[in-house]
Image (cartoon, rainbow, N blue to C red; front, top):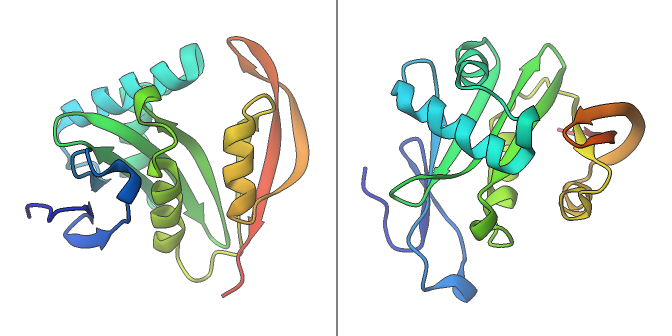
Length: 177
């Protein structure tokens, strides 16, 4: 399916996204990634995650395993040429976790992470009661975004990140259906 002007595509469903301030940009496509996706996409996801996170970034195998897992959700945003955004997580029983969110540095502040979070939350099963995530304490932009989605700080994981060493805030969103 070819995207229409100013559209995001999720799997085979077209999702419009307003980008008036970014009319000069290409259309973005959001793809649901699964174990049957081309293996090169897992390499692309890993490369993006390592650009954003550093040495703690996920391997291609990590993304593949999450896409292959029952309850796993992996979404990628492309600009038509390359992966520019990604989110991965899972749900199990009544809970879930967002494990990684990444946006290419030159595409930040353009709604990509917001759209990925929206789609991730749209895809979780109805029985999911809460979603958790960890975020670097210094990542104020990500924390502000998560707070806009209703995530609240519930704790701290000491020395969670290695490169550089930093604590992570544990944030949780309670889902009310």
